[in-house]
Image 1 (cartoon, helix red, strand yellow):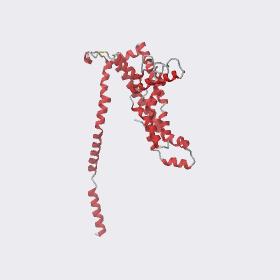
Image 2: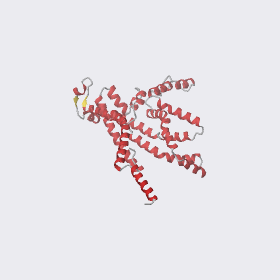
Image 3: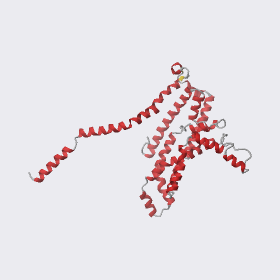
Image 4: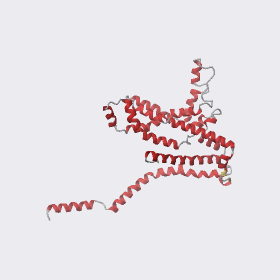
Length: 327
């Protein structure tokens, strides 16, 4: 045997000794997978505790629940509360108005969902880093302000004795205070504008991250071809952001019935209650103010089921349009 053959045989033997067998590789892969699974266990526990375990409360919709008697002492009524939603003219009228408020505000939110995208594009075009960072910080901070503080700001500015009425009165433009808050006019638009003010900077963050991921060679090629700043924005930045915008838009459609409660709870009063009461606030008012937890649970159940149906419908649309699902 030649020296070269001996070296080749020794090298092959060494490689075989160092290369783990297939069962050993499988065991190693399973161990890594198990360690990764252990990392997500705490999050799975949190999701179960706060998202799935509370579904046990749906059973209250089948009882005429009385807190003093407890669930065991309350009468079982089956689907009575669901039937009442469609059989009582008063209840039907209330739910109809609440759904109109909910859908109107949701569609206004969808219509204004393009504003964070536009804001992110123009913010990215600011050349001075210090000014861009200052604008982004100032527009993002409102997201971290609670709605209670937002209402305090609104009250100090727009109440009958607020700053705006004071300035208008001193300027001689009005003789009686303008009721910006204590009115049922333009409630949907007002709530949408407050939501835009609070979430504009925060909503732009995801688009800024998407802009940072755009291939810079596209801009360089466009600049060589003589494209100006607005042309690069329109023909490069906007198309590159469309997939992100489409996903967020579809998720917004899936959340048509989920407006939240905090904003409308702090802004509601006797004058605007008819038009500001969205579905989440209506459930709260029935359950806590009206002391009818069973009816509130029944409405909450229907809302959750409809939201799930909307989610799957939107997911199907996304799969058909984009070629892939979003969930």
